Length: 143
Ligand SMILES: C[S@@+](CC[C@H](N)C(=O)[O-])C[C@H]1O[C@@H](n2cnc3c(N)ncnc32)[C@H](O)[C@@H]1O
Image 1 (cartoon, rainbow, N blue to C red):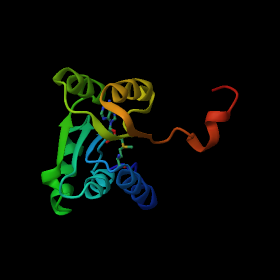
Image 2: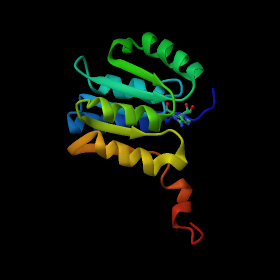
Image 3: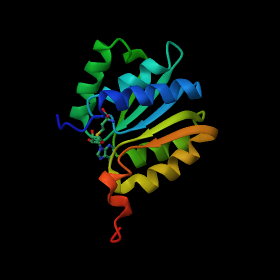
Image 4: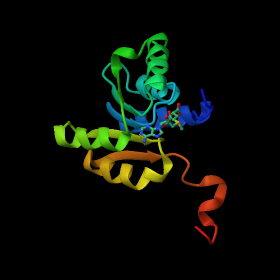
């Protein structure tokens, strides 16, 4: 697997933010092997539910195995496909609003993921987007 997962302290921060928000319904863009997903699933406790969107079937399979090992597989639904399309389907399905969203998939699609996240949340929900600082490059003039 590519080493693109959040670091342990970032995972813990995600869990802390979830707990501070009292989040029970979590949406994640970008599952990879399920590392951040495990943090999010554990943060919500028994009543927590995570929907995680992943492009690659292979990654989703590994994530499901890891979620099983972490004993949180029953709290997580991994949906395979382009995350924007999967999220659009969730909007169409009229799912209950999510309390917490973690965006960490295909970076150029972040604006679209954010727009979809706003349609899938409620006032007071928390949306976290990874990698927006880009080692400070966001302040570079050419950006
Ligand atoms: C940075 S990794 C996710 C890491 C994971 N959140 C963690 O911290 O453990 C990004 C993931 O997004 C997936 N991805 C890339 N393009 C995607 C797309 N268009 N839709 C859904 N997932 C995508 C990649 O396959 C990869 O698994």
